[in-house]
Length: 365
Ligand code: GDP
Image 1 (tube, rainbow, N blue to C red):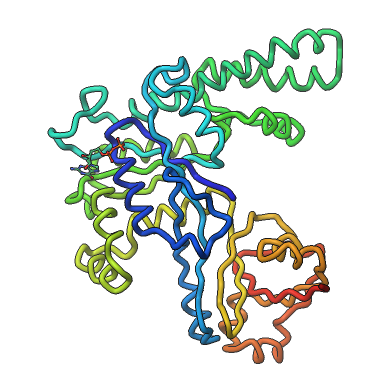
Image 2 (image 1 turned 30 degrees about the vertical axis):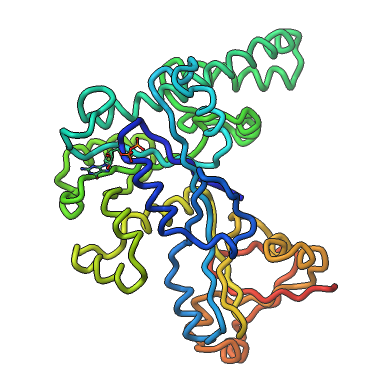
């Protein structure tokens, strides 16, 4: 399963945020694919379409889809040189598919800042630099291996060398791999290098609990936004403290609390959705009288693989998928009505599944 790692300097609010995630926590029984690990929190993906489908179909139960966040503690300056839990930290980052970078934007004299003052950009750069240095090291090692063969005009080695040299130059200017442009062929080579700075990133600006409403007036948040724009990254504003309070509430209480605060959607829910996007994930639905359920798939997969997410037999024996888009189904009002309007398609093995598809798989056993 794909997972997003939460990183940030010490004392920026990572654990507080991660606790909110695990408390809001999904029941792992529904999600057997999920890892049981204290550093992994399972989150359900908020999706209003699921409620709407439940109203239409009136099933016995409704199950949202979920994915994982991994808490990656322990980065400090010098991590790439093995300071702190440096190497361990980097190997944990290597295993995640995207990065949520938490940045301290709250003022609190009682909480020590590692570098002595709140300075989000310097914080971001500290971590980014450690990742870049770690990548520079792996690329330099690789260059040593490839350079000789490239000089002997080995085609493959020459192609790789070109990519490596371009990356090395970028890293030396403190530019992450994701900001370097490559041809499609070269991108495949880059992918094979499993670099830390190739992973997509979003920034989580952690503001004080009383600043949530006026986050736009928070100069730190503004700095983070300006920085993120250059990195083509999203910024999600949260108050980790408030989120940990919200996470203790159940559905109705949560809505009332948010209303009192004057916010439409909790920061955590925004973070979950944005991270889902960042991971390249999307949702299809199955809707029967027993169960209405959302399923996560990686954008770009075809119908049989989507069926395989439910059960490997569905993929092996795949015949076709009766498919209707969520919008068409809701507009028609029922599956029957959608059929009569010709909105239910019979899709075969080559069909690229789309976000919002409501699917019914036919398969041989
Ligand atoms: P971590 O080291 O990044 O995991 O940071 P923690 O989550 O342990 O937070 C460090 C300290 O900052 C804790 O005492 C938190 O209660 C506090 N903290 C986290 N978020 C906020 C916030 O939004 N406002 C204030 N005032 N304190 C916060």
